[in-house]
Length: 369
Ligand SMILES: Cc1cc2nc3c(=O)[nH]c(=O)nc-3n(C[C@H](O)[C@H](O)[C@H](O)COP(=O)(O)OP(=O)(O)OC[C@H]3O[C@@H](n4cnc5c(N)ncnc54)[C@H](O)[C@@H]3O)c2cc1C
Image (cartoon, rainbow, N blue to C red; front, top):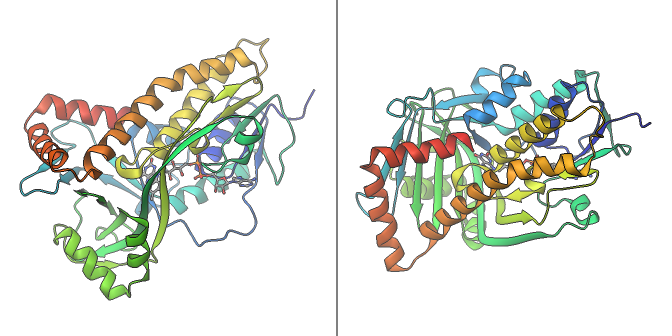
């Protein structure tokens, strides 16, 4: 008899969410503590979360605990290609949904989840969690345990880095997200309320490694000039409201996500390009699926039962595959510089913009992943 039912390795948002979800079922969870020293400052990213993720975080009582300025609803989205008139517009109103997505402060969400696990009697924190019938690996894309389990991680670098920062704009954002596909760069402005309520954006700017280095090294005024030139002031005049940081981008997929006594969740299982803002959404969908499978298990089955965990893998295979393919396909289409691809994507954007059922389908896919 072990003291814990589940041990969870890793200290990101997915690991904390899973610990809370399993604790709600009365499972005893040994969770990895966050390392005492963090190399970087607070995470500058603002994540776009879909309604399924918001539902899960609400059930875990993490959503309502977020400070109001740490979560902003997206009501409209404007996507532009790299030819005049190539654009696609989505609106929550015409799609009859309360919001297309919510933009959430990564550091605030981490803090709220840390507090919740700290107060949860079913969750114990350890630097090295003791063994348990089920080990869940949530260590992110560079997971060491995944390798120890003998799971291959097929990865392909996109040859890009994503620069993230907080911006302040001189016009209200009105809940409008903007995205530019300016082959090979992809630039997104996510409406946000930090640092200035109603007048901020989260920036995600995917560029080549050399361009990323150049943009990060530019003095603030020159960076802002480059940014405003790239956005054409569609969202107003933008100024930096934080430091800048960059992440390497890759496509990654584990060869298996479950086995006898173990399961992989989040970026340890799959990594996608952030152009569709779906990586964490996929990770939180893993959490919901694994928690559901464990809740449904027959009383005689151990949480680490291989057949049980295979159910988890089966539930996740289609959704993850579809989102990975869609994100990679979009990247191939929009980052490619061949004239034919350029023509195709720009015509495609305009076409989709005028076909309401296709737009509805696209929004549905993004909301339900
Ligand atoms: C620029 C950018 C923008 C993004 N935007 C979005 C978005 O808008 N929407 C969205 O859904 N997704 C987005 N993503 C993806 C999202 O960041 C990831 O999918 C998500 O962070 C994965 O969470 P995770 O908990 O699985 O992994 P991680 O966030 O990597 O967390 C795992 C953590 O565990 C820690 N860890 C590993 N080993 C140990 C150990 N032995 N002891 C203690 N800790 C350990 C790691 O250091 C890491 O901090 C974006 C990604 C990037 C790069």
